[in-house]
Length: 613
Image (cartoon, rainbow, N blue to C red; front, top):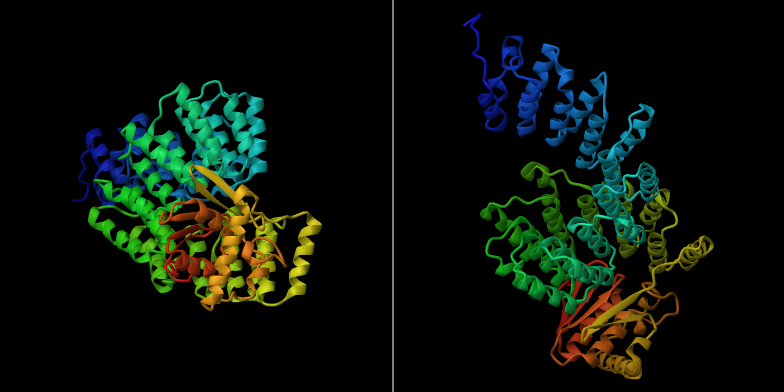
């Protein structure tokens, strides 16, 4: 009825609207409904906005405040609500309309951009603050450091660190923890440890952060040493234990991993969500997929973390069908996948050659699960298309994806690697050019480009690449492999058998024996792998690639029938892959190799990867 007054909604009713099944039509954006907002105090309205999980409610409140002319008294609360609900565009528009901003609104918007996976915009805001004479506080610095961490911007992170030092904020535990994390993700473990050691009030969070930094940078021994120090002054908790389990995974040391599993069980933490996920990951990375599966099967109530960990592990072993079956089970358990889960599914499809199925999963992310694919999802898709020889599609996708910093390197490196496999020199040169614009002093892409020329018989071009690297002082990471025997790790480098000690001669004799038996069975190497430059260079015989030396030593040292597990820091070459298949048949035992990209489980002359890697 025209002119009829709508009753004022009291505080409990407004709170219910904010929290429950609010519909925008229940509080229409009109001047006649302004009475719904007018009696509400600023503090009460702030509470409503903070409690609300409904975007429509927040936008309606925004609209009414504009009509009432009281927007700016609560604008910071509105902006924070938009950020919390992931509405970064609304937050930016509101910020731009504010006649006066403060440290809270600037910091809140920066946080919003980080949550929206746009850390570069958070950095821009941080730099603009100085122009507007806004002085950052410890929360602002933490947010800026977090953005540097996401982008691996070590130089800017160090500049912010200097500002923090000048202002005396390093005593703030949260700021110091953020700096530790930033340096850890920028390969600055020495800086991270220095900050950690200088902290006066270390707590469980900072100890866990420092241990995680070592774990993330494959410095597992340092992580375990620090953990032992922590045990002398504190009581282990799930966060610390999960970090140490991850450290064992990073160095592939099964013995230590099993010891940590026992410690976890003694403390009654085995069913902890994070620890069970870490154990699944640790056993998988140490070459014990069945143990990963056993941990998973013992979990009474599966969670997102346990499902995701198992899917990722299965995908890396080439068990795509099992990984996808697990993914299909999740809805029946009422578990909604996240971006990491979908990334594991894409990896499984990539390593099994299930390209069309993988593309369907990629396209379903937004529509079915409300997840925007990130740079890692697209990188995995480029890798998947590239492995299948669909390089033109991979190239077009690479051009469309907006990626920054390390994400850009991963994306174009995936295309470059595929070009090497399929000898596409034209696209390889394009990918290398894109990578050079980001960082021309990185060895990896140049090595792959050189190998691409070699595989295509372009020796002069390959020599030019190596000459350029030499002039710039760029050196590739030396190839190495390691095995664990009686809780001791033995590391082998290409052509170097000295790690075998007194058994060095036995190792070389055994490898020669394998060669003789293979020739008797009609196996001859490709003839190209000795110059594939995975480890040494032209003229280095493939027979002494590090994984072969490690296998020979392990076969002599590990009891008959026990699985041999070899870890390798580079991609396994094709000749070595074929060689391992035949050796597994000759010796009649299972062999697991973890290389840079995935796991290979050899037995009776075949590999779980199906020769697709």
